[in-house]
Image (cartoon, rainbow, N blue to C red; front, side, top):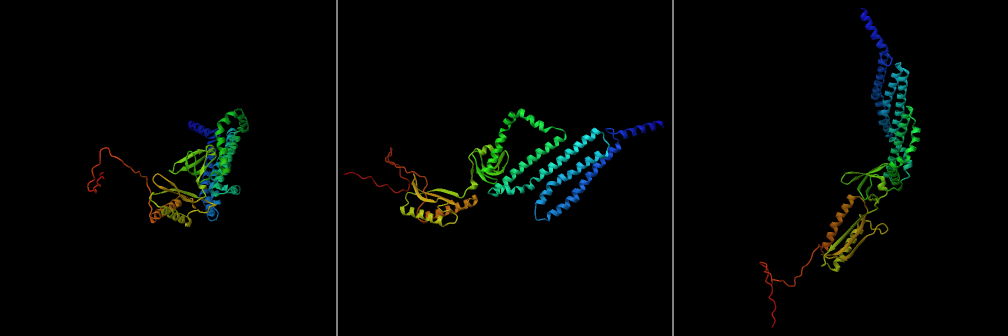
Length: 389
């Protein structure tokens, strides 16, 4: 009996001093308190968040839905932080453990605050519309909004890291001051980053292109998908994605096809040398009449140049230069207009009795070294050579 009582006394002693001098009962109570808040977190998500979502869906604006989606995860994480704090308050841990838990809780609070701000940047980026409204097109405003949103996220993330580090007595100011000792090395290593950053700002300020524009550089041609701090992403027409540093774009010749006011058609139409002067004039005049009567072509001299003239005598053809601009810049519509124009020019040439030329050459033989060739079967006999008296 004494042995059992002694063993039970040992069990009670272990139960009382359990972990870090805290009884196992208090530890289990702390764990229960933590899981209570986890359960409350689940109830909060299932009932409160769903109820708020039902209300926001009935509103005309989508802003409240976006903000709720942004803060939903941080709100759910708050219950985890409260659970850790409650667990530390329930169990009488030693001062060292309590001090550590206090730092953990403060760090998580700082993390939650800056995480919430970080996620709210995107839905609240509409506040930049007044600033970006100073720029012309919707595409450029969207690009600028995305640029400033990324900048805001970067700043918030840096401030959040500093706030968490300071909770652990990490002297951020001293570290930043110490960077002066290696400033030259940092500057040398970051020169490409700084160059790309300023080139990206120059792209926005100069309005070189914007998201969705069709551009061509010395290295790539395609559609701009994103303009970032350091790089610009261009989707080629074969659907491959090309990432180019902004410094390369800032110093290169960039052709922006999306900024075309009109789209050009430049053809050389070759007619046979057998075409008469009247046929040439008739063909040129009919093509001119068709172009100037059509609403698809820009024939205002103040806006575009239209030239349809006999241009030159080529090796195998008399060339007519066709040079004009369409009103549309859309590639698909432009191709349809070109197709209809080709059909019309072919009809005009045929209606006027002319014909298109093709590369050809004539061979003149004055004398064959082995006499006359044998006649082709069925061919008419050649006339006899004249004889001299």
